[in-house]
Length: 72
Image 1 (cartoon, rainbow, N blue to C red):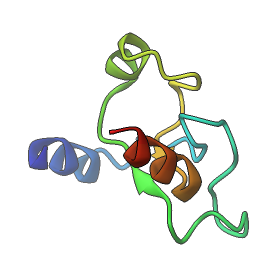
Image 2: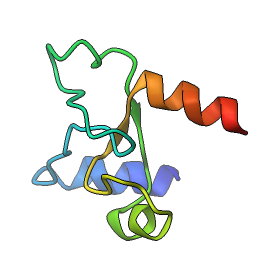
Image 3: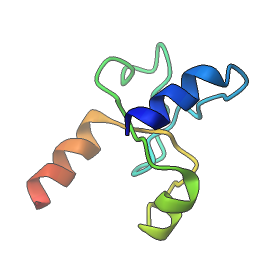
């Protein structure tokens, strides 16, 4: 997990896609969902294999995180 973070910090050209990978909502600055968003450290391929509806999204919004935690 920490190796992924270090790779992201080294690659300055890597742009995060600021949408929730569960609901597709915008979680960028001034969206109202920026503060409580959670970074999803899985790569696109893993998110696709796990059946995420929006695998391009690099974050999970607070509402979706709460729904996912209730299901566990």
